[in-house]
Length: 216
View (cartoon, helix red, strand yellow):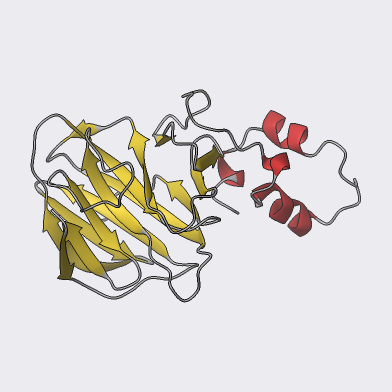
């Protein structure tokens, strides 16, 4: 079952099904509910209402739409320009925190570059993670790690349909791909809260956040 459907309430599903053919096959119903259409109820950010209790995307940027209780992030417009959204609530630097991101739609094939990672409060809103001293990112196109604008070869690439796990354990960030550990990407530092975050480049890019248990 899709990440988003699995977190909907019965009432939310019933509301979204209004006006649909009662004879529609269940598989088609699931597909329609998980499409990023006006019927799925995307919300422009600026409100924390309806956020998953384990955390969801929070941003006031006009170039993002968020749906599925804060778990689905879509880039809208501003094609070819970076925008970053973070996941709230944050946690202390050095604690153990894990997110998974399903790369649902990456529009510019094969140039499938998005960046996933962590940021402190002062995140690079109009650039990608890793361009500042207090953000760190893994880029899908080349499999590189980014920090302080340095581009460091790290591991294999990722593409549409993959699931990328980002783990903070102690002062380090680890990356997983489809359940496989790619390794230790970079060192984290700083004070205050740290947040999971995603940087999207192209209009129509979609990622789906989930909160499984951290890898052993």
